[in-house]
Structure formats: C-alpha cells, structure tokens
Length: 443
Ligand SMILES: *[C@@H]1O[C@H](CO)[C@@H](O)[C@H](O)[C@H]1NC(C)=O
Image (cartoon, rainbow, N blue to C red):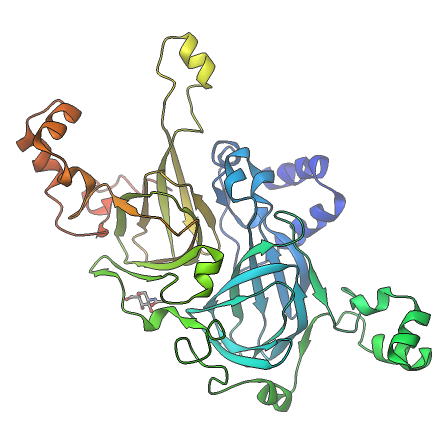
C-alpha cells in the first residue's frame, strides 16, 4: 500500500488534476518500472521514474507524457529548469493530428517507424522516422506524426525548451474534437464567422464533428496513412538537404567508442547544425550486458539521460546531497565542508536521470542484457569529457610529483592502479568480481 500512501501525499501537494494524471499513469506499461524504494525520492532527486510522469494527453491511440519541472523536483536541478523531458507515444496506424508547441524541441526516435510532416511558413517537409533519428522542431512549427506500423508503437523522446515560461510548455491542437478541444473553438462564434466568412452552422459542423473520445490521436485508414507517409526523404538528410532542414540519423554514424563492452554514438554541432543553436549534444550509449561506462565527468555539460532499453544502475558522487548534514553543521563539528554522497539508483526502460557537470558517474548494465541510454547534454559548447579510469584517464597525464603528492604514494603504486585498465570508456562491469550467492548489488 506504499504506492497509495504516496499518491495521497501527492494529493496534498499537487492539484487534483495532477493526481488523476498520475493515477492513470499507474496503469501504463512501457514507461513503467518496478516499485521503487520509498526514501529514494528525497535522497535522490536525480532520477525520475514512471510515477513522476505527468500526462498531458492520454487516449487509447497515443500519449504525451512529461516529467515534472526540474526545479520543482529539487533546487539542485535549477540549472536545467529551462528544459522539460517529454515522451510522445503514437500507437499503430495512428496519426497525431497537426499540433505545435510553445517550445523548441529536440527529438529522438527511440522506437518504431513513421513519418513527421512539418508545415513551415513557406513549405512543407516530410521526414521518415526510425530508431535513432534526431530532429529539431522550432517553437510554433506545426507538425503531424504518422505511425504507419501495424503493431509497433512509435516513441519519440523530446527535450523541450519552452519559450514563454521557463520550464512550462503547452501543446496547441488544431484538431477538432473534445478532450482536448481545438483551440479554434475557444473564440466566440461571431469572431469565427467573421474570420472565416462563413456561417455558424458550418463552423459548428466542422469543429464538433469528431466523436466523443477521439482526441488529437486519430486512427487512420491504410490509404490515409500511405498518403501521409514518406518512403524516401523529401526534405533530405543533413548534409544533403538544406541547412537545418533535415534530420540526423545517429546510428548511421560510426561509434566514437566501441569495444566488447559497449558502443557510443555521439552527435554535436558539426553533425547537425541545429544542435549548435540549442547548445546541445546528443549521444547514445549501448552498454553490453555486464559492461559499464568507466567513471568520468563532464566539464560543463549537464546530462539528461533517458533509458530506452534494458536495465542496470548508476552511481554518482554528489557533493550537494550529503548524508552527514548541511555545511554549517559540518563546519561547527570541525569537519570539512565538503562531503560526497553516493547517489545510487536502479534504472530501467523509461527512467530519466540527470548527471550535473563535474559529478563523477558510472553506469552499469545488468546481467540480463544490454542497457541503452539516450543522453541530451546541455551547455555543450565547451564541454570536455574527462575520464577518471581507463586507458586515457586524467591521472595518467599527471607529473610524477603530482601523483606522489596527491596519493601520498610512490609513483609506481599510482601507476599500477591508474594504468592497469586497458579499455577505454566501456569496461567490464563489476558483476564478474562478485562472489557467488551475493546477488546483484542493486536488487
Ligand atoms: C545494442 O547492441 C545490441 C547487441 O549488440 C544490438 O542487438 C542492438 O541492436 C544495439 N542497439 C542499437 C540501438 O544499436
């Protein structure tokens, strides 16, 4: 009954609307994980699980979910409060009818196939969507999404940067219907009659035609789907299409890191110019079963990661969330004001987690299969990734005296530890070292 208690607590804090959204989310499948330890929420504001998700639109044919505002979850996430993470899910043989957002969106297709049709001021573009496609949609650009597949859902992960209110976005639906309604129907009928130079009867027929319950996600016939789908690119893939017009196919790139323990695909402003405007880079880590990403930190970027497949866990050293009380208390007790807290959390398909700049982190795949994660790195322009272990770690570049003074040890000893791992970035995970019967650390 822990879940019910949590929801009751939510009722006190949030509005009734938010409550019903999270209740309905409890029934969802794909983006839901197992139960979570209760105390994790307070101690670890860096992970979002399915019970955190809010639902903007939910119907039989598709959903638009978002995680809450970052700064609402925790003050520690204020640095990325401009952003929101959204999941758009379009069911088979369904069209998300034309919509725009008051937010610029960088999109990553995490599964499924389909087409996005984009209506610009002076032209219309269509792009094929498949796993690994990245595209940027500017705020206010009207788009529709078609899932032509007969069985598979189309899932798109979006990083939104709202343009009106920091961290707050709204979709604007042209579609006629109830729940949600078309924004057109908000206007007075005499206004619409004058604007369209038509009769109120005709307007009413058009705007109240759709059956009850049918919303912005609409089932389409095979012919309609075919007409709205592209088999070939009409807008072109960067760099062959016009600048900023195309999409980027992340998995067509060579991995920047690749060994038995995983593959990393990375794209930055040189691969896709809109990423420069958004000051963003995108990467996709496919960590092999029992593999892990060796400890590293990002110099300037904050990483917003979404698990697209598999499960595992991550550990991070965090100086902000400290077990041993606040800074003042520590200083009164004569202890150093710096203490690192171990943030550790299981992650699984649908988990969203945040790794702030400077925070050393590792990500470990389970022994059940690969762990796949898409990462949006914000504030990307001058970012450098510094490895703390593996073939190219920072300690290896230090002078002998630095090593000796830092670790109060002979250089040879330091080198034995920091020079032993020959793999780079992806390494074998901790599983193989565990004693039989010890079980998985994160279970
Ligand atoms: C990740 O790796 C596994 C195993 O090699 C592979 O089956 C899967 O397709 C990969 N995922 C992506 C998105 O490339």
